[in-house]
Amino acid sequence: MSRLKIAVLISGGGSNLQALIDAVEQGSIKGEITVVISDKENAYGLQRAKEHNIEAIAINKKSFDNKNDFDAEMSKQLKSRNVDLIILGGFLSILPMDIIKEYEGRIINIHPSLIPSFCGNGFYGERVHKAVIEYGVKVSGATVHFVDEGTDTGAIILQQAVTVADEDTAETLAAKVLEVEHWLIVKAAALFCDGKLTVQGRRVKIL
Ligand code: GRF
Image (cartoon, rainbow, N blue to C red; front, side):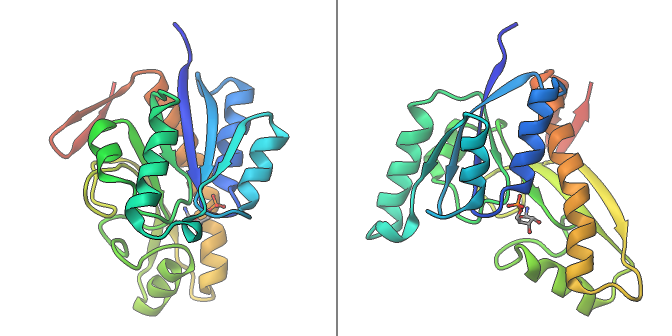
């Protein structure tokens, strides 16, 4: 069985990308990361890709006059590579709608909270953890989900909770959750590549 081709989209440091690269190289993900695309020129994740001989492309949002032109370039780059799975690993732009439709059920996103809490427009990165601390919840965590037309609204694949301790700050919580993200994103990619994920309505079942 040929290995699935994976595109990973990033916007920043790429620690989730690194977890995926390591898992592919260790053989726990039966797929191949064939391209890494960033919407920011200087994302360190591009460097991580290059160090592992993975094609790294920057589609700098700032160099486009409007979102349509950015979307068109993003779609062109993705479609031309004919990937089987798109993973958003800390990707902060909204994907073009034609990609979301064409790749329905084949786009996975990692979010640093237990969806449906602390998600949706404006909830990304540090902002998520600040809201969690301010609200005073006792557990938070990470969620891997399929991407649909909404923001963080697709069917949930895996979740893992972490305890929010009294002494936690947004920074210490972010670090705890990021560790869990790395584990979840690798597990979800491995299950997808093994064909073990089935979706019935909003429910994702693991075969
Ligand atoms: C982190 O805030 C993570 O929670 C979210 O994207 C941010 C950067 O992750 N998924 P990464 O280190 O670029 O993978």
